[in-house]
Length: 466
Ligand SMILES: *Cc1c(COP(=O)(O)O)cnc(C)c1O
Image (tube, rainbow, N blue to C red; front, side, top):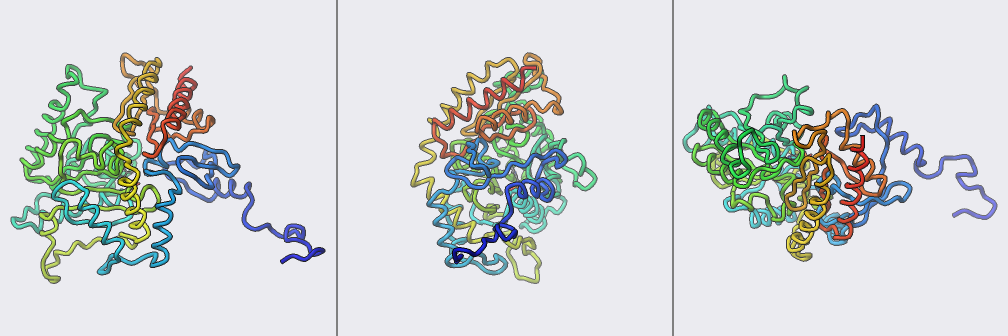
């Protein structure tokens, strides 16, 4: 306690408690190496707190979270229910390893995921991010073919789609196909059988929209037939290829890929890291086409956007191939220190409870419809080549030439300019090249959604004037 007459720390010339605002901004620019960010030109943008769908920076300025804190927030920030679940778990234990041990919260989450996920997925391997969820699925598929009842050890390859994104570890990058991110690492990557980008906007010449799925499936079938003896699995982002620019697959494509995988005896890995957890209007995107994959990857929204936790779900067929006595070395020798972390599991359980308690999925059709209305209006701007939507995922593609569907050169950064304008209007957006993404938390209100779309529209106007 300070008595009258004594000097405060500040008056004695000592540092006040904690760094100053200026120090924070300088350290952020000079010390912190940000993901997917050119640090030579990074301008600090520091969020100190959040509430619901709003983020607040160091000056207390509010921004609507227009992309769910990079596609992961579900029920809003600081949701009392999720906050309480984490605090309750903290009162028990913060971490228990999953290597030969367990804890009740993680066990309960596994049970819930098995109950909710498409039929046949009965086992859950936990890790801590989307890339590892995919890495785990790739390695499980590989090892499966060496150990299944009729071993096929020559099945060591994957079919993955053009412009796919599955995370940034080397296995995930190998199956990925976004040239701008992945090309530099090419010498480190394993070879994959590359399928087409099943793009509904830029269809090949002579292919009508109604024939799109059949057209792309025809190409996939030729590849799978030709490589069936060496393919361990097909890896797919169901319905929407997120990082590719929210590219939407033609309806029926996922279903067709499932049928091909079954027919040619190849496993199907569904990477629902971005599209899972209600994002598309159903809990899992695979449900739209009644598809059950052999391996299902979840992360991003799994904890409501709170904590790093991921899950790879597997069928009994896959699981059984790993059973045996210890000396048989059929064990899945893979793990992450924090896989299945109980704090993350507590957040995930509360997130799933909220889907029921707040009837989250029931509320989505009205929000998707409102988003669609805005997109129909935005589509009329001359430099908007395409607007595409699936549930609460929207991509607005800016083009130099609308009739030729010719994009702006990426170095012009039109998408970024549109998003910077939105940020100045109090809406935080982050684009994918020339594609402006709108992907708010599922808890967004209609009024907030209106503000996000209006800000995006004005941003697009400003960014495409010249
Ligand atoms: C984000 C993403 C990943 C990677 O998840 P991280 O948690 O960032 O490693 C993998 N797949 C898809 C489809 C994604 O969108």
